[in-house]
Amino acid sequence: LSPETVEFCLELCKMAKKYGTKISFDLNYRASLWKNRENELKDIFAKIAGASDILEGNEEDFQLSLGIEGPEAGGEDLSSKIESFKQMIFRVKTAYPNASVFATTLRQVLNAESHMWGAIMLEGQNWYIAESREIPVLDRIGGGDGFVGGLLYGILKDWDPEKWIQFGWATGAMATTSLADYAQPEDEEQVWDIWRGN
Image (tube, rainbow, N blue to C red; front, side, top):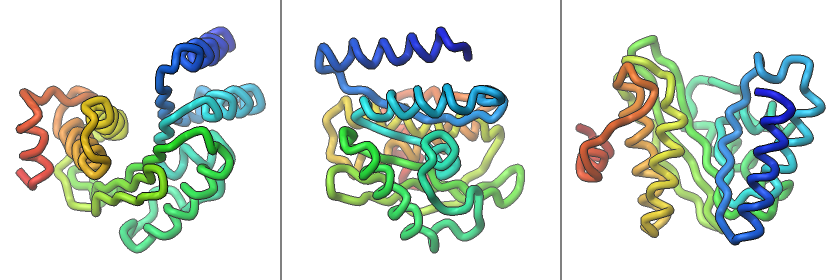
């Protein structure tokens, strides 16, 4: 939002590292905020990504924020492009070896009220995929953030990594079915119910 904000975020990262706190960085590239600040923000994003333990973003975020080559943004038939997403994540891992978890959502817009929604994650050397499924959409804003929230919840609960991406998929899907840009599940079981298809 401002040069002071990005410097503050970098200082937070340094302090977190000092105390052994894990750092999650959701890239969230926004063209309007980067206008006339490309060099400044590429530099600071690279520094924060370099300090991070967990990196999240969609294919556009990784390409535009970090300059990592990847698949065409928002393409059709995302499930057939899983290998190109894996290659992009490998490039991110090579560039930012401090991180051990890399995750990206897969979204194909069918129409304003229906999306194909999936996710892919690399944890250590292991791949986890939440295959794309059609979900109803009331308001798409917050789906990615909902995914990250669920993913981090699973990590903090010390679940097996396969459950991280499943829970994230479900909380992201849940956020898109609400007018708010976040999910408000009653409990874990409601989220797992969404994962199971309800």
